[in-house]
Image (cartoon, rainbow, N blue to C red):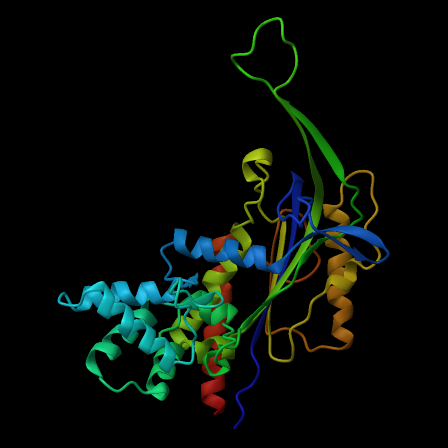
Length: 358
């Protein structure tokens, strides 16, 4: 029997004051043209990194994305075998990665591209290398596909040298965009030299910085069955809930010291679906226009779009809302803790029902 689909849809409305969260190559805040107007944009990659950093801050085992994977293995080999010197450890590490089909630069001992690996994978690679003279590509592949850290299981891994080591992502994260049009603003600033003569009134430095302010619509989904496949049932459930928490509480740190712009979501809707995940950004294809704030009108437009999606989709198995304003849909929860508890219970119930049906 085919396992039914199980998806988490995560919708967030979050207002951000003057900020430059995510810059383009000119240093300006990233933007997107949508609905015929310019929107503030924050890339999915920058927010995923913020989530990964959040995992580390919460002592959730996160992977390491680096070109220095060979050095990690060298250190682990020497840790497990005290008689192994660095030269021999390097030779063994290169042999392991060669067997895995991953190229190591002979001059720098680096991989050609960033490689996301978990601590558990590095430890098992070292154990395997020390226990076997003849290295098996099949066994090394098995090691590099097991013991996945949460971020690796969520966001996946692409290995250009050997696609067999790829890990399919179980999570999709959209680029956040503003629900309304934005106009770029500029901060002209100066800096004074504390020791300059009193008769010198000039600035020691001049500069300008582009910024904007916005109410962002943020969206992500989790393929729960894929996450469980990458990990296991218990780790998949706790991992999905941990992702939700960090997605809500973290922010990219671009120009954070300059703007102190960290805010919290004002509206969160989480749906547990068995049909298909759906991004409801279409609620804002016609930009919100207002002279007294965008948040309330953004919530109204979003909830109308959610109701309209019922013309195409089944009602979610779970539909919970955490909002600072009154809402017209979903089960209202009082705080983040209750939200996460309901999602956890909903996931366990849905998975249990799958097992019973199987």
